[in-house]
Image (tube, rainbow, N blue to C red; front, side, top):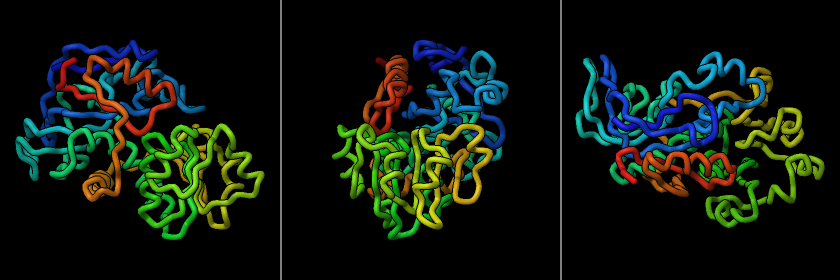
Length: 322
């Protein structure tokens, strides 16, 4: 099969398409033909070896010193079942499915092996592109807002980085839960963020989170999807009983997160994946696909992610040829 292989950390050009053996599903596994997969910020960090502060050494020890041991990246996908390992129930060859692979990765390829625990049937009204696009950001936003913050109607929410994959999902979900949403993004993306549900948009080039704090602004939930808010700078933005969500936190902030500060990896449970796809089918979540690419254009996709100006999601279609 064709797959994007990253043998060493580096710029987008280190991601190269190669012929590799097609995986064989073991007992309890499902082999899926990948129709679409997102190229997410997490993939870009793993490709480049640039990890949040404090994570560089432990991440390289766990993932690989000079490059990722699992050299085929990609942690979310949508596709069709082509083979079942022994003992798998609930799926059949030809089923449309979507899922996540966690640190096993492997989704940037024509085929990927997944476990039923992280695999769900894709709703008939949701395309492969839409399913793949919404999974990474949607799952992160849903876990942080619903489960970590326990967001309720009438709450005030600040989403920092409101036009990215996680941010666009966070704005939509917060509005769906009945919150009053303020989005921080560039002026160029203000109209988009308003359309997604933000009642107010702040241009981050004009007003920083620190300046918001100095002006006396307070929110029930502050959701940082960028990585430029710390517990020290974020807590003063909270109302009494407020919650600070740090989706991209350094090691120290992650280890110290307690009480009103929530950090760490988002859940990839079966329920989370199923809920995100159901919300997409119901029209609550717009996947917002900025662009799609065949595998041969993976470097272009990574360059856009690395720019920090990506709006929504970028996907690759492994079975499509340039």
